[in-house]
Image (cartoon, rainbow, N blue to C red; front, top):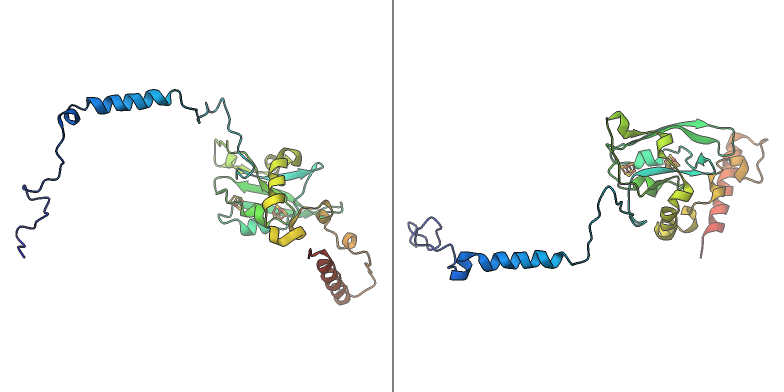
Length: 227
Ligand code: SF4
Ligand code: SF4
């Protein structure tokens, strides 16, 4: 083997790297006219672009935009369970739970999402047992400072009527294997053991109360399964 003069050595002057061009290819004119013809044809093709921001795109309900809190009958559905904050990969959600007099008993006194951290993954929506946080169609988000990017409860709350498309989408496609356990029901938003248990007996000891609660939960779950 001749190591001093390899057959396909690009450094070797004898190696032809460029193909031979014809006369027409050398003057480039046919290729320029081909390009102009293609551009001319595109002027009459259907348009897929929008004059943003004058014209806004209306995304389909599968779209995952800014996460928002669902406002139901003037108050948030959220019961401040903390699951969404736990599931959020970049730790964008923070909240402070508080107790209230109404039957729901718990609500988020503070609820914040740092939109500089949010990666629009939708995990918060997936884990929420109350359908209280959903991905909206809002993609048009602008901040003027880091503080401005932290959305508080007032900015996050959106009436459920404005989120109906996404809520319908979730009803149809979300984790169907869990059946009705994962469908939002107004009754489930009442988080009071007293309201849920018809045979609540405050005379029982704590241990007996917990045992009774376990029995109630077990019987309720088995009666809810769809066969
Ligand atoms: S969409 Fe993802 S990153 Fe954004 S708040 Fe929800 S869980 Fe966190
Ligand atoms: S998972 Fe749902 S109910 Fe629980 S804190 Fe988050 S938004 Fe509220």
